Length: 220
Image (cartoon, rainbow, N blue to C red; front, side):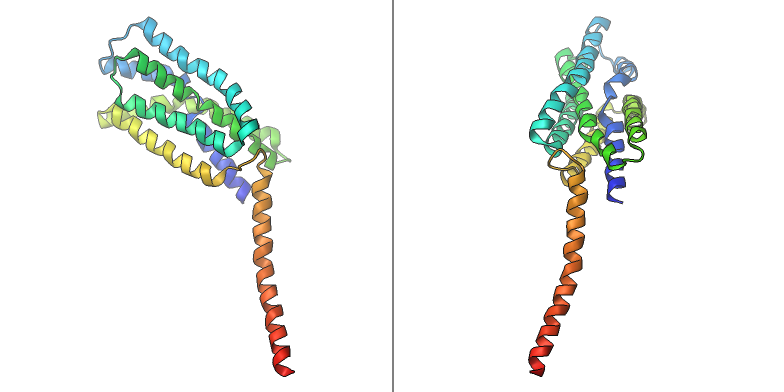
């Protein structure tokens, strides 16, 4: 069951933050409706910052994962998304530099997909299918901005929508800290779980043996 929980986390986290910048049209429309005065050229440049960080970030985060392990780099990717979402909540709506930086940070969420995708190795009989589903989760994340825009309309506040999103990403950071492997392979989590079960099974046997020895000493 542990491997299914790991896969569920991989799917959920990828769906939430890996490719959100590709939902830019919905966010762009919401910004303009809320009074953003940036021209189309500037808005396009801000989107480009996010798109570049999606592509380049995966390469950088892949190198970092090879060096520092899955957990630390996965949390770093989530932390970038958290910072970007908080920045989107509190920035001036017409601040082009802040928008570009926030989009860049949000795009770095793509690094998380690279960190969690090896979880497919835990399903040797369906590895290709599991990887394909995670790729689909990346595409699914493109609707996040649309959902945030609709939530902002319901709450009458884009700031509140992004703060709620930031809170959700914060929860993902906590889960990643306790759930992701510190090294490269997800198998180490299963091996650790098996070792814990073996230790738990041995303790009652050891206690029974000690009780038996004590009984024998009392008889003697």
